[in-house]
Image (cartoon, rainbow, N blue to C red; front, side, top):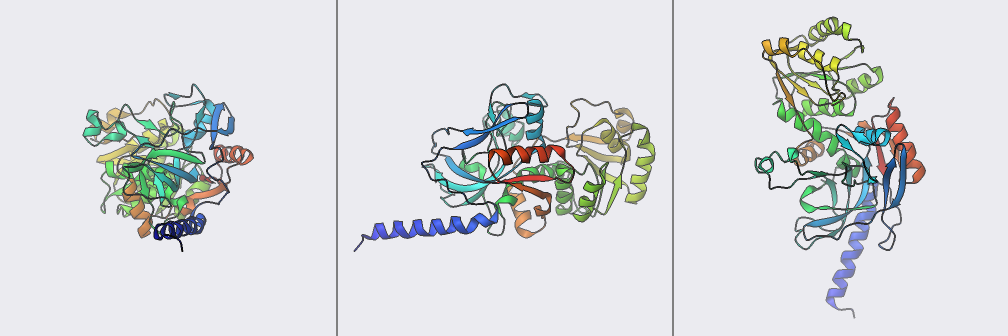
Length: 385
């Protein structure tokens, strides 16, 4: 007869294997990959040069967890790095593992991690702040100058079989939230943080400039925060139809011509039917910001979310005379619990945003990034690992 401890260990392992197998369908495809196989990752080696190569992980620290990646989304910043080896002021100077929108399954936990166990499905917040600077102590850790963020040079990303990450930045998924939805917490967090910064509530009439992935999650977030009317503006008819399907009250197609701003502002305000309290510029171009400043009511707010241009020339003086507040956002802070609650409750549904899925092979990685870069009908491209 087997010792009691051996029986307990055997049953635990049996249940764990069953749990992992059952949950593959919630956001990933299972591939054989035992502990003896090399950890592989998608390395950015140069412009339009991605290669799946071995990725050696650091030792597991006492507060760390090892996570087997199951769902990883492609962000616009990932595409920028692939096409230009830079995004804003961040420049890739040496080979870097790419990817930061991710969720997976806990493989191993450090000795001091108490809230997670192997088999837990988790969404990962990708930024590790120092927790020592004044900004961190104020609670604004997203602005930490020492931030180490997945796939922001020189920090490696998460498009890999396995990653090591702090346990306190891994959030257990509710049973009814898939791994793909868990990976979508990262872009959704941008919209949630923007709505918090703008104090969106049940009396706020909202305009969203741009119907790309960030504009769409901002739309969803504004709705979840109680905004009674949201209008979305874009130059792309297909993306506007997606915005309409996701719950925008009205959508307006505009041009890229600066000369059209006065007539377009008039149309936007007429379509809203009320004064516009908050405008989110989720594109970040001269025209979108100029339109946002002109369309927003006196005493209202314009929140700059997108960063299409590194520098913009916009009519700030007329906006200042109307006391239009301009606020910015950078990434997010303390958003994962609320995102997961929105997903769990059904107040936000991000599944329609996932338009394309790929596996984790050299060919599929290349195809996935080209699909994302082309745009068109692609909104969120997701890897099922």
